[in-house]
Length: 334
Image 1 (cartoon, rainbow, N blue to C red):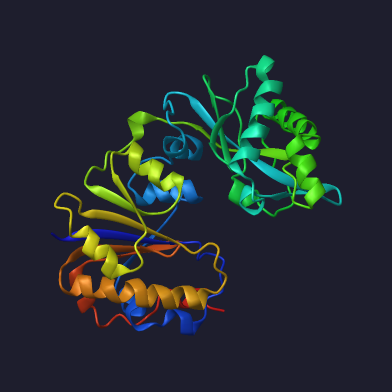
Image 2: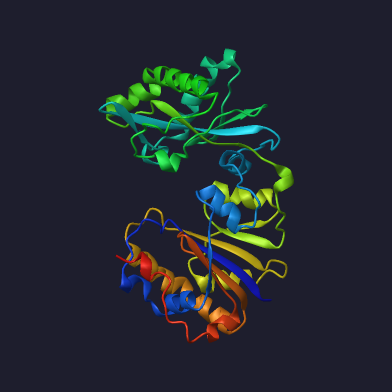
């Protein structure tokens, strides 16, 4: 079976590229001989949905809820409501995400229980997804536009709080949560042992899923990590697997299936700072294999997204374009 592969190096954008980092032999050959296409989709959800051939971006909350909750109704409006720490910084606040707070399941559930008890009369009830992710479902669509947690983390929150007609209501809820959490036993104990406090919540990932816009992908598979990608596979009737270590491991597993021949491989490098190291690993772990796969027709197409403004499409015949010598990443080098 011949496979179609889309490989996304998520998080490379913004990292400093050098001529040495882009001139690895296999990577350079693949990119020079590919056709390039502009990518308009911005933001993680929009780009992931676009690369998985969805007509619209799937909202984060409803997508990840499919994985983290035992049951998540796709006919209602969803929000992520994550426990965070807000630190005063002059005349504003800086958000510390739950990934940095070492919040335990017991602590998280205790805070969530207190929140639900306090807001019960308002009809607001959060659902536990994990120690770092809570969920809220609302029957009607809410006019709110939020900032994704990844874009707010470690940033000055000036201008990043919820917007829209319903924003004042949710800002009030956030403020009340801060007062509620301040003297909660979880934070009293954390304060005593010098651990960071969980003193607020962050709302994000809002949206109502348009099920009529979902494109079924029963012959496709997403390889990666995270509840959003796994949830997208679930919603589109596709398959999901954790990211394999390299091309050979991926190909061996891919060959075991007789029905799956379309693959989205997501390599998340957002936490790595050195672009040279990232592209060196891409070269040795993936590009050499992709080049071999195209040469031997094990792959009938490869689409490479380096998280930049263009994507690169190759088919086996494109490798014969020996006259193409310009490197499309040269303009990104300092």
